[in-house]
Length: 344
Ligand code: ADP
Ligand code: MN
Ligand code: MN
Ligand code: MN
Image 1 (cartoon, rainbow, N blue to C red):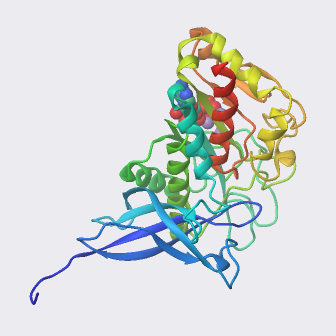
Image 2: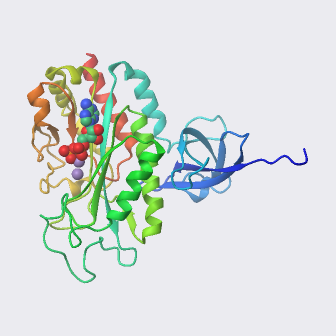
Image 3: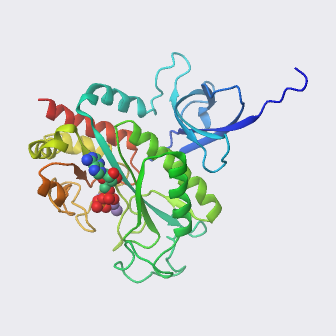
């Protein structure tokens, strides 16, 4: 009708691509009228490692949406899973579907996750971490972890913006800190369930990469960006079920289940690329070919926090996952392994 105005808003469709060995996040913008809700859409999978050119369409199916804290107003972010066009079944690169299945199977145990995403800010011109001089190295590790001050800290403005953006988007961000290597940072998502932790982590990663465009730094989730005496970047996985939050027997049973025959290799295969480079037995890690658990032990595969030992209930921390792991994959593995053991 003449005179009608439709107020348009922007929906940023976000999905996870098929890049090997580490998946990357992609997005594109859809303009919608104020009478429209974001429905399924599609993209050219031949440009993302998800299809061949002669059969290139891949379906985007919205699974989680939140306000877009960067554009503001009525604009939204829409996280999507990828589906095949022929029968709308999950695309082979869709790792969320398995997380949904694990949560449907074991949701009655009320699994909860807190993921610690470590990452490194890189100078885009030479690939060197922020805070590393162009032709050399900064002073050895020691003062940087949770540090304060101009020489020690690099990128705080971005971290502050990212944290506020996550809060404004309604994501379950639970904290941030500067890490052991200069230019390295962490944020945590949780505690939330098996599926939500992946949804919120991928959304928080998107916001971080997107905001970094304004700061002339590249965000890397590589597991060991600097070889030698510099900490790698992990994604410590804090996990509990209702039984673990209520008693210590379940805490021990969970640790034992992760060390069971075949489980160590199965989990490491889903814990990200370059696991052997990071899990060396130094720099607060256990070696990748050893399995151990212990109270307060940051050199163990699994740490039982001291407060948990004291309270005789709580959660465990799997310290093995790499920063570049897919949170859907880790949450699926953890839920299936531990919940199957606790169900016995
Ligand atoms: P660290 O001391 O290892 O650096 P952090 O404080 O960075 O620990 O991260 C701890 C994470 O554990 C947080 O994301 C928090 O939400 C999560 N967490 C706390 N309690 C539980 C619980 N019962 N189950 C799962 N995760 C939990
Ligand atoms: Mn932490
Ligand atoms: Mn950390
Ligand atoms: Mn930790």
